[in-house]
Length: 490
Image (cartoon, rainbow, N blue to C red; front, top):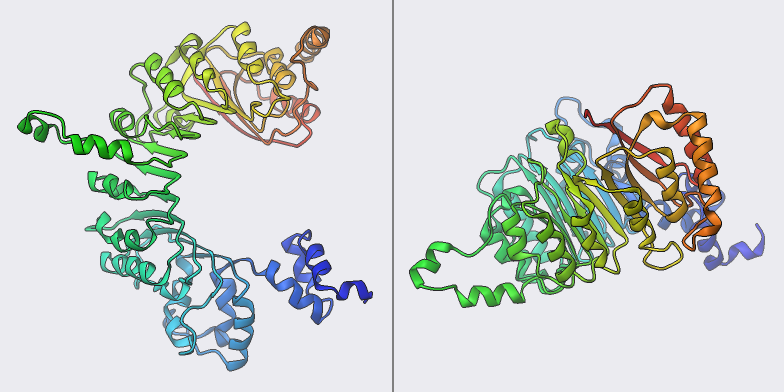
């Protein structure tokens, strides 16, 4: 081996550029490269990959929860690997392994992965016979926890929360997706609130916590910056108590003003009243998503909605209203809203991502050009994600306008006329765009340089046109994008 490869810093830099799939081969060069490859090779692993080697001879076949004990040599190898793990992924199939953690664990080790930063656990939608014990995976350095639990007993969930509060002091992200649990309340998370309230910056709450008490719990997180909240209720003040006292509760109003002061990113599912009363007065919001999963989002007063958002959220960079799958499930079309109603949102000068799945926008070709040129591609506030589905399908020429004015788009959502992709229409559209290139200051390279995702809505499409569209995209994109098509039945 060349002497320069004996310098660990140089080897670490080289290994940082090697894909994880190739590190398994690189680690076999010699002992020096082996130990240098371990941190990158074991940074992100699945629980079964990490602990399965400890099962000697496959274990007993009569009971999946009974396996043989590991040998001391296997424990030594495991300790070497485990200290490099930063992200650990587990699922319901790993429960038998985790159930025997107490048998494998020597008394001198309190947890398996001492440097673990992120724990991601996904349980399939089946009830498990025994509840896994996560305590051996909770290292004091844990910062991110994402748990998807189904059929776990409330007592076990409460024990998990208490263990998190006593063992982990640096928790920053908490994501919970809980199903099939009866009797679980937000009170179970109170121990975590006491120890990690000052550190939590991102919280995702499950539908089971749809209570006013949950909102009060979230208001106690002073540094909360990202929130995913699902509410089927109106988390507002009690109108009966207001009537009994003869006025509005001043303490409640003051509390609402002080809450969510640091909130930057919000994903909200719930009633419009709850959204307006609790969140649409936060000028710090830079990313906003309003999603209705169970029913289609219908904006009662679109003019007031978009005007209010543009006024109270001047720092907004991303706005997403609705989800494109909503109307597919209900098999109906979004309502039509004129562009003059939505146009006010362009007053948010930092807006670089706009996704409107809640409506079909009625606009003229001139209005489309106004949208595309409102964020020049050479400025820092250029369009990066633009999903505006027009009431009338766009032609191939309109599609080329996106490549002309917004070449650096990463995500594009468009309602396209699938029958416009014939050789004559494509040639005419390209000639028309070329003729006007020198007459416009906003003109770009006339191709997509970063486009990775196209959400394509079409109302009519001939099967023979699909391959032609793909070939056309290959000529207009530097990176091959993925396409998510769906059909609107007009």
